[in-house]
Image (cartoon, rainbow, N blue to C red; front, side, top):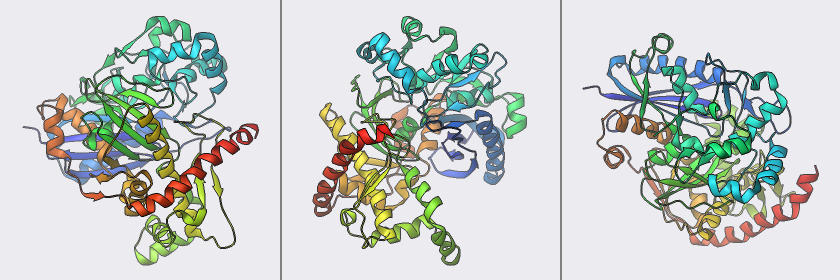
Length: 503
């Protein structure tokens, strides 16, 4: 019997490849880097071919590191970032860079379509408001701004379906990523041809829809030559990174909730029945017959990656001397500052903001500075600002009827004990932390494991693989301090949003 599963995660700043055994233990893992391009204000795009090159090289090195026989890989699962619009021609060649989830260039198109079709009618079908970050308007943007590209489009793919195509030669669309297109009927999980016509999206652009754990194809000779995988290895459709991370955190029952600490922040609340709110995001879970009510913010772990890159030269050098990471040293600075950062408040709107304010003009802001403030105040306020955005989304979800209890944290940010505790204190919710760094790839391999029959079902898979490593209880004294700062957080945006829009 084949012993291992391989997961691929297409992140925003890098890909991750990991090989797991049946118990969910990582045998070996590796990362591959690629760039985000920002050619104009509001633009954020990537080259999908650079994803593929990074992935097949990382697969090869990870197989060597693991020392496992390629023939012992039972199946492959792929997860990826949301809301790509990968235009490929009839030969499967990528026609242009894809705008990614942070890209807001199509804002004017959304406003026009909302007027022409009606916001309520679009929302009723798709379960999501029509916003620039989604895939829908990016396709129309190609039509209006890149006609030479548009006329050669055969299919529009998502990040994971593109890598599945490179591995297998099969064009697919998994159900969890359907929410990026507003011609996807969130009630039935199918394409709606009439809405395609009204939006101006040719129906033939849309691949066949597969369940996320469904085997769609097998590794080709070309993909095997590049990656070192065995020809014929099964590959499942895979799914949305947030949904796979939700599965990898063990969230498979109604109202269980994942807290996301990757490049983006937010949460995913598992639902048994359709329940949409225009302020939030609704997708299918990667687990059949379940939905995820999501809050998705642009300011998650990416806030601290930005801060470290721009302001942590000293910590990087000190880290070389002490053997500590620069992020750990920044946490050490923040820990010396009082909860509430002595009145410093940060708005983490570093690429506009998604839910719940949906404002492409929103900007990052530090408020409350004076000569007494230190670098530690900047760091702690950034950590707290991301926690306030999580609280904001949770409050909107509660007002829509989705009350949650324990949060299950995943993503690199969950490695920070301080940041996780801040999130617990700000929200007033206990937080459980399973395997933070590997939750997303674990979710992808669970899909593969169920798809190829290594696990009987998702219940068995989660019971076998997901283990909580630590637990955080909220400090309610700190929570009271944060409640006051949270009011300031909300007031700052309300008072500044018109100014942001004018600049």
